[in-house]
Image (cartoon, rainbow, N blue to C red; front, side, top):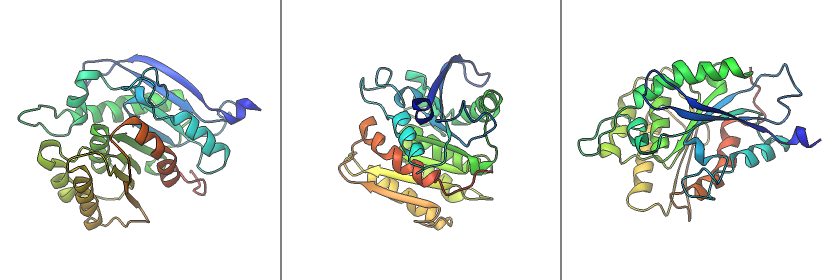
Length: 264
């Protein structure tokens, strides 16, 4: 049946937070079989820049989106990943930089990632759990994003490993505020280590690849092991755009939510 091989998208418009002033839309992917299996519960992945994930008509570059629904549908139907719920959190346009950055830069401003984290942990996550059949605990909760969304992801993931046990960190903006995230990652006190997918494109320009390599090195010094709870990759021929990140959706889903894992 077609209904069993395709997931569904549901949109919650103009979600309002008490921590940040601007409303934002949420778009929720429900996996194939969600309606039929009324007692099943699912892991959840929270992705930033929600308008770029599912629909080329709403993406930053028109026609270029991450194709998350198609990829997740295919991998779930193949049994390659565990069925999961994916929540896309729209960014707020010109306020995105402020909300996605964990520290304040003298020239560029920013630094509201802590407020964003409060919104996610205290409002959006409980809202999703009230509306959909989710599984709790860090083993069933992931966060992801690219560029500044990747910076936000690694920051919140390291701050709240007791919440987020799976991180998809694509092309993170390690350069922000003179590499502030490197010092934060080096000094953060961790009670547990999330599973991390970390990547960067070889053609992103500047020192992007070197910066992300440095972040990988810090994580290894903190106890992560490549090939075990850390996947690091410099993707050849990949630029800094949605088309490049779309090609990494399948691989990071398989690394973070493999079908062999039992979700409990």
